[in-house]
Length: 546
Image: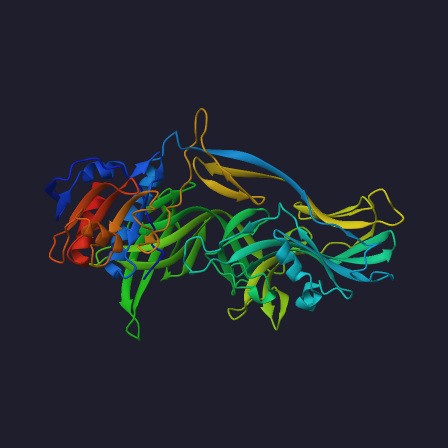
């Protein structure tokens, strides 16, 4: 069962249960209730307001029916936005400090002689900082394998985290990703310390859901979401050919139908064709022709099987999967589109004095790689300080980390017995949001609820993901529902049938049936027929109404 179909939006249907015949295009379907009124309210205030529900045991054709409806509604969500659903740029400020450690009065690590050094670690979550406060986990190339031990400085609350790196359910996991700061501090004298070249890092590392051990480190790949310098990004590429990692800010995630176009930042993303063939093993293979156009002219194109990428003009498209409808008439491609691309050639400076590396797990250690292979178990990204040594550090001195955070020494007005080391942040980020949308910034979730005065045409939206009939019930639904398939394949349709709310059998024609108020006070549209083919006819008819 394909879980990663996109779900769509919307509806209030108020009518009596009257059956009628309805001709839409070439499809003759049975209509129960006021389906037309239902269709007019698919997009409410620029947002979807419904879950599409597919049976856990549904056939591929039912999944395709859901995708066809989704693709159309995803287009409406973009094109029907008005001045009431604009965007705004917000400035977010946040400050925090980690725990501190007294270099003079604490004996957790022995730093008594000149040249002694220890690793200090902070993270967005103190449990993960504690996990990585172990020098045995760091390879020589990280330069974080301090000789005298490691100390966790716990949580730095404004470092960012992503609690689900798989927001589109493309990989069927709920992995997490966290930001880390790691510094190797070397003693020069009791009141003078140093951070040397290569011995200071910022990193983003991914762990299995709630697995706070070193063994919980898990792989990252294109299509996953991670925090990066305080903001959420989608990984768009981890190129072994170019030894480069590319990130992008999500502007749209959903399904684009063959021949359709999605516009963003003055560019058009077009699914030109989806061709199906059979490989040597007898499996169907879908090849996508995708183009990026500016002013009607192609600036980049790609013809390949998914998953694959295309990036040009400051935007990126990740194509995850493709399929055709039951009649093989149209193809569909599930994508995420991003802008504000961040390219990081590995082993080169991302910004002055800070080089980018892939972080891999090899032989029980973390290593930094500037030459990556597909076989590498890549668990994160690191930016490593490669500037001049920061020596003669004393109380009140700070070492800047990427203009994002800093390492600070502070004697707390007791120079004889105290010299605390800690990480701190005092940061400001600008973020652009559409009305009703959210963004993760500096470990806070920001929502733009409304705009006073004139608004700006937004760049795009994200269509939500579909749910299975095992994930929602009529009693607990908090939205209107579109059920794909009749009682044989959809448990919620079966429940409605047992309540005598619908009468759909294996002999039924293509049917669109509205049942009012039955889903915890919400309305339900059943899109079904006697088999997969008639269900798809009903779906196509509903798409035409939209």
